[in-house]
Image (cartoon, rainbow, N blue to C red; front, side, top):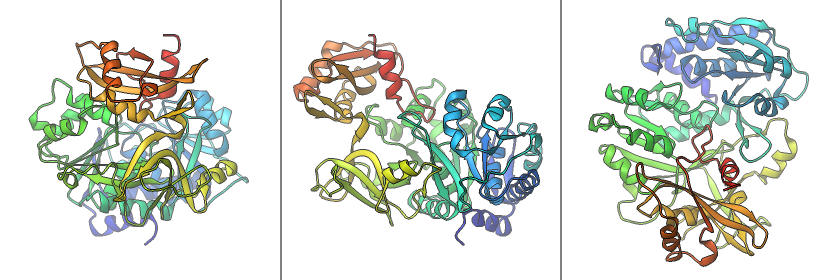
Length: 501
């Protein structure tokens, strides 16, 4: 068994009545999920979708969208979950190298489909009650057109990356890679058949494989919400069914700060998974208080290779700083200089990752693939170091490193200091152009609700812990930090909103 879909078929045979999916409309067993997958694959083939063709899913997260992704893979085509929040020019930049393609949508953007030369089919019953296969019935608007160009019949899924940093690219994952990755995540995150994972993150993010695919790999249940909405999450938690929770730190913080959040909402949760953050002070402690029966898991990953290092809360009770943890089994992490040579332990360099399940490349982007995939490993673009015990620590993104007066400043180091100030709720540090120093350090801070921030006090706080060239020259007090759809701080947007301040 080397394909992820084989696992789902096995569950449908041996545990047909076990719950697989829950969404706003209904609850579906593994047998119902597999029936929907097979019928969807047959419908796509009838539309003319051929192995290696791309099928773009412009749908909100939910059972039909997930089954559609699997149905595309079962048809031998390549699933491409689209960020439906992209503006048309952004969507075009991402999808152009993938076309011709078939676009699936609940509410079609026919203009986009026509511009891209895509076939178009709608799912008019996606939100209607009834069997899952019925919710996925297709109405053809424009037939699919098979592409004679770049093809990869081993490819299963393309996940977008790079939209906030430059030219968007599609990281290609094969069937075998998804199988190996889901198996790793299931083991490392200790997912059991009896678990119910509450998921409210996008489907166009690697998290859908890390969390949802891994949950189904274990034979567990994925409870899918179409978006992050505090009230909807609280309603789900109040049922007492979810046993696991995943989210970006900013989303989880918003949940904890909702006036309706109470002890009963954390009672059933046994695991909380989140991405690392330096912008939210005392975040893990707040999670422990809100979910007292849960173990916390965080780690390191990227779209190109998924989650490759992890650290768990019960491993840190001795007070040792384990950063983002050690590499998971099968993964190699090196820290290299600009020439690709290993640096000494404790020295900062670029994080280089080799994983059995890493992407095969960027779809139809050979130059970008060659620049990123080096000697079988993936250049992450992250700066970090390995300590004497082999634990990974991050210094920040290479592109975010600030060079001020010839000195390197890592934003995460400054963020960690500012985050410890009692007036600060969230913080992001970035570089701004400076005619004298080349770049200057600036910080955007969000105060606690109903409270203010004293920039002079923050400056003195930083001077007590940082070299002078690392102290922000300007502090911007904002109501909120701009976020990407994946709930990460959008530093490019942050530079724009603070440029004229």
